[in-house]
Image (cartoon, rainbow, N blue to C red; front, side, top):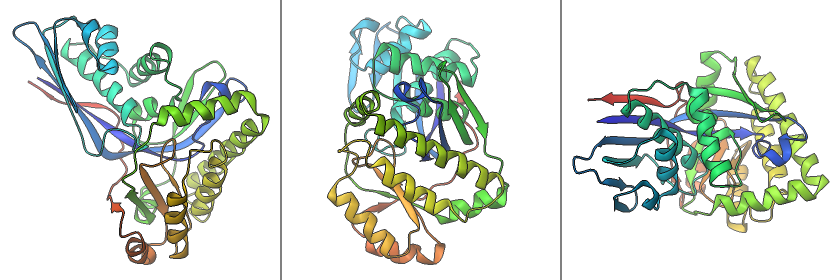
Amino acid sequence: MIISRTPLRISFVGGGSDIAGFYQKSPGAVVTTAINKYIYIMVEKQFDGRIIVQYSQMEIVKHVSDIQNNLVREAMKMTGIKGGIHVTSISDVPAEGTGMGSSSAYVVGLLNAFCAYQGKIISARELARQACVIEIEILKKPIGKQDQYIAAFGGFQYMQFHPDHTVSADPIGCNAQTKKKLESHLMLFYTGLTRSADAILARQGKNVETQAETQHTLGSMVGFARSMREDLNNNDLTMFGALLHANWNLKKTLADTITTPQIDGWYALAKKQGAAGGKVLGAGGGGFLLLYAEPQYHLRIQKALHNLIPLDFGFEPKGTRIVYEG
């Protein structure tokens, strides 16, 4: 049996600039971190030659081409596994529509587990590249590249997306004390709302291609990523909440489905109770609400958002790993 563990992520600023429609014209950039919430992939030999895939459903098939889960199917094709395998997945948080990059983490974890199952060693960069090929090129998902790379690399990263389609991952240079302080100021709440990220991102991508204003907005968000990186490298959190807030205000203009009156209401309540800034993770429309606030305001923010589910978390320094081989 092989078990891979792949971290989910939180993206702070710059999200959306990792889509090809933007970075082919102007380099994109995000500040993002892996967190200690994971997707686990278990792979073991199936003695009778069948393929069994367990996730929210169970599939039992004889041929790879018959697998309905397109991520498992394409990961098996890419790694050359023909059959006789049992694949199971478990996630620490709801697997879809949460804005934590779960789909890409799932693909990266699959590829890592399948390679280990075959005795192959593969680099983090190659795992991320292959995951991007599966999701963006083969399955034509209207998504960017940050989720695959942070799942593979882990850590607290400043990522850049270049016109030639390459990705740079540069660790944020703040010290351990600053990271701990930042963690102590962050709050996560599950809204209970799920949405199709693909639909939101498809509309956003269309706006990037057709509207100069959207391109300009994303350029401003890339500027926020550069500013946040510089502040963090100087161990300065003074403007962190303000940058989150400014980025969220711009992001809401990228597509009309990124926020809702309900989300806006929760955010306004949190701001009234002391939050300096925040955002909805991922494409928007639901999932998790991230807030930045001084610790003395956390209890009253939590009381104000009593109908949401808080989630404790920390930063994760490592990317996808094989945690069991036996």
